[in-house]
Image 1 (cartoon, rainbow, N blue to C red):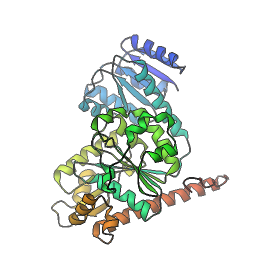
Image 2 (image 1 turned 90 degrees about the horizontal axis):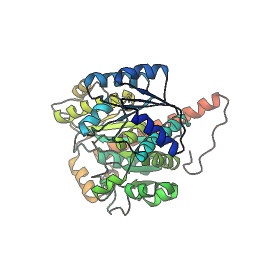
Image 3 (image 1 turned 60 degrees about the vertical axis):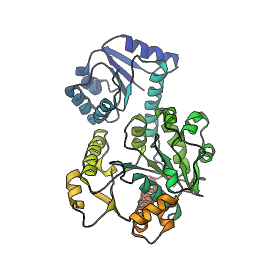
Image 4 (image 1 turned 30 degrees about the vertical axis):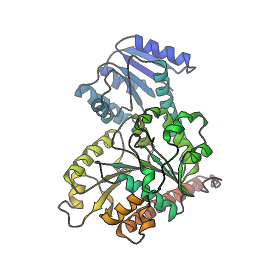
Length: 401
């Protein structure tokens, strides 16, 4: 991996080179003293895989230059070193396409972990695409029903489409996804897996999950909010690498807060499902969220809008939403208050509680379409491989695909 460092003080490239040597990572490194005006030339001429920037890049002009570079060179990883770590600032740099902001003074462990994450990302990009689909559900505004959708669609994929499904609750501080389809509190969580990430394999992952059905399990969020701090960005790739070997679908229930962990998880998603309602505040937040997704480099066809609690005669129509967001609506889920409330209060999936209800039928249709689309893509990959003269891959002994 080729690394370039642009800094205003030689201390930073010297420290970075020292830390890499101490960690046994002798990556080629080019260092220079300068600022934002050098970023475009470096990206065009040196073509590094990782660019580390130190300096003041907070003004709109600097962020515009960074946004231009990340859009032209989407494979370039950029790390910023700065003292500013406020949520508002992190959102701004994410919109410019920056994935990592490291605090200064820079330490050995923080730098090496960030470099390893980018190295893993490069390796994953070069790996053959497997047949597991990763689907992320996110609320545009609090109370949009994203957790209900994630858990119930996951249940439908397992129960009705016979898919192996894992759900990860990435609402790390306040997540309660398992309680939507299971009536007992989980005994372990993502935090427990993170503490022993070095021993993570399929068996350990399965033993850490709540088993809702034989083919549907949930890795719960931490029981205590302070345990969320134990989950680090470097834990995300190993978690996905194991899960995607053993499941047909990995469902992500992601909270509204965008941070290094949630962005890494969303990066791995094949499709992102923002959940919104027919209200102005919800649509306004959906607009902001779609702008952030575009700034992160997500194409529009990665986004699948779901209008939850849909009412046909509402003041705001589906056409109003599509015109405002400049995005097509994927599906609607009807406002079925009685069934949804009973299902959530009892910890039972809606399709199990009232399979013929309007909301259950809608969830079944979504699950069936997702399952069918995944099957069509799998067949297409096999046909393309056969057309290139390759042998059709043998069935995976775990997933059966």
